[in-house]
Length: 165
Image (cartoon, rainbow, N blue to C red):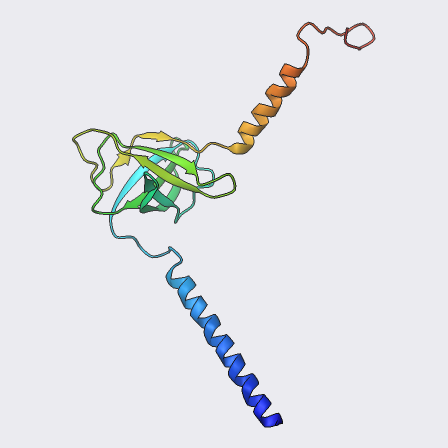
């Protein structure tokens, strides 16, 4: 009986190990780190807070590419983002790029809005119309600061003892 129980424990352990290896293989193969076939474009932003290498590039919410590189231009200290775009998506020269939040708690992605120009962006060219990332912390700080400024009465002047009149 003890021998049968030992064999069952070994088989159960092997099954658990096989399932764990299967999950590991799936996670690595679907991690988004694969190279995307397509052409490379660049965009320049003042801020790219939260945008990471591997972030989605989307048009109308549909993924059409991936952010492949983010670096700083040492001449003007502007963030330069490189992206790979699917080869079947031909973007007009007046396409705009905006760093957008997926949700309040989610990550960021690069949203492209194609324009109406007849000239098509060629591989390696730069999207010139961009909108940088908006910092929620800065917006919240400005909102709170404005609330405290508005809540003080405008005609309240300090008296000689330091109290408001």
